[in-house]
Image (cartoon, rainbow, N blue to C red; front, side):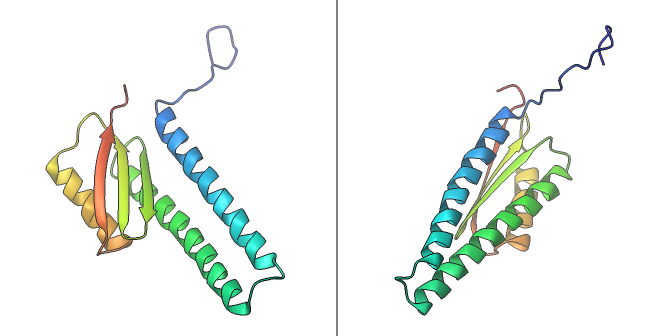
Length: 130
């Protein structure tokens, strides 16, 4: 609350992270819509419905893994984190002015342990003052 008694809007320094999340959510929403439309089509076989259902479940699992990983990384003291899981790749971006090899290794280990030990993990950082 400001000196005049009015609330001051709170802004975050992580607009880039919000934008990355929005873009990913938009992509995934479109995919989800395509999967649901395909499953509701009368012109596909039961096998295709099953395959599409599995793809939809995989998408939901990815989103859950990413959200959990972001929370774990934030609990390590980072202001924000963005995690994107793509088959055998995990891309991690953390909000930090710098990132030591120790911290990178810690994040890589966490991603391999929690999500996919065979994944190629990439860790980047973005400054709070980009």
